[in-house]
Length: 387
Ligand code: NDP
Image 1 (cartoon, rainbow, N blue to C red):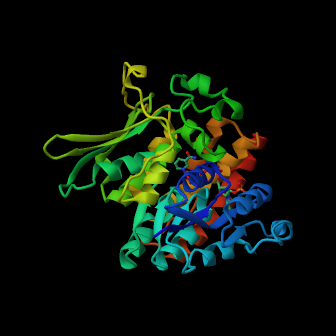
Image 2: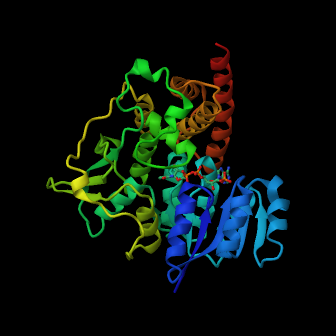
């Protein structure tokens, strides 16, 4: 039977690649739901091509535009953030691919979990913000969470068939565009510099997160929740070739790694076919093109966002939620050329210092903390702009 897939964030980098995978395997998958935030034109084109049951445009102002463009097709059109939460509960869906960016992924993921869906999770911010709550709900509702992030997919694949405890996770990192710059040089980097990732072609927010290495910090937190491993056993290893997608070490010292060309179609497809595999239309590795695979420790004094993410994980409660909100606000300000690269870290650390944190938070605590942290982060950024 075909797996019926809701692609949340179908117009983004992960979403469009997921639709390529779905199109390449019409016998295995159908796109049941497609969603976008602002990109109504692409959403409409995707809907005409894939003929889903329904589409959701999160930006309500664009409802008429999408509805008008699809009026001659048997496709339902909804709008708004609440519609995203409702649509994932639909009985006609088997898998929800969470490819929204940022905090916006949290509530639809929770609703999908509570509806016993299989979650193919790309949206790492969900676990950064509320990992404990989401993983507990996933256990309670027996809703499998299958990682899409390439590092976590690698770890997930290394763990297949293993029952032994994990001794260490080696989370590999390309190091981003600024790996070889000095702290002094980092003070002068621009938005355009940050958007030139050496290995991966991704959405703007995650590309900036990769440049600051906050992305790797998020992935440490994501790995902690997905695989139930403490922070001191999750080691980040800079591996500029991005051929080893991550590794797991067991207590006997044996290490398993998952390798391949850096191409997100493989982990996206694996999350959709799991526990099976099928052919994937992505380039296969030619080892002679990689005569040397190299590794180095990340410089936590240079990449302070990675350090702050480890600290946030150790502190727990709502601190990672505050960090995520501050990061989203800071990255947006950086992308809008309102603050400098180094201000991203400064505003995150000041927001964490200035926002009340809560131990053992409820869902409502996370929601309120996110709102409060964004307000504080905006104020801090305004001060940084005028200083
Ligand atoms: P993109 O920015 O390319 O796409 C984001 C998608 O989410 C778009 O469809 C966008 O719609 C939609 N969206 C944005 N904001 C909202 C909102 N407030 N409400 C509803 N929908 C919204 O991001 P990526 O595809 O790069 O990343 C998606 C997620 O996957 C992120 O969490 C990222 O960290 C993670 N990830 C990405 C990887 C990659 O290679 N890109 C690798 C591993 C993980 P619209 O187009 O209309 O703006």
